[in-house]
Amino acid sequence: QVQLVESGGGLVQPGGSLRLSCAASGFTLDYYAIGWFRQAPGKEREGVSCISSSDGSTYYADSVKGRFNISRDNAKNTVYLQMNSLKPEDTAVYYCGAGSACPGAYDNFGQGTQVTVSS
Image 1: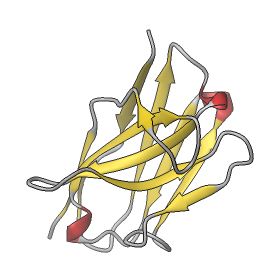
Image 2: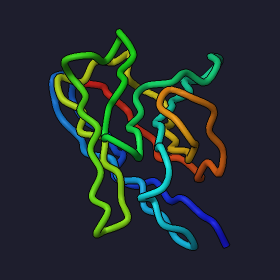
Image 3: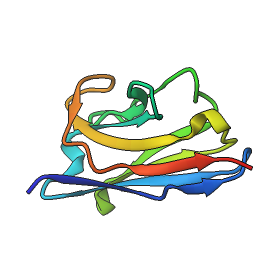
């Protein structure tokens, strides 16, 4: 069964950091681009970042550029999203999905992990 599982969310103060993990089971992440998305209450889901499978190229939304960093550890079958200098507007449920290109279309989203940035 193909499955992605997100973890690492939590409550953090503005300016703090979190590292999200996207772990795969049932398939090998090596062959897929992985994208991180987020959805805040009352808002549409938006793309945050992605990383390609071929050359490790990355993409970041303007809203997170310079603060977030995406990386992959194929040996652990996991993709990470390091989030620094967090802002209240980063509060959302974060999801990861698998696709064929970065940027591109993604599916097989996990259940998500809640990130709350608040003092």
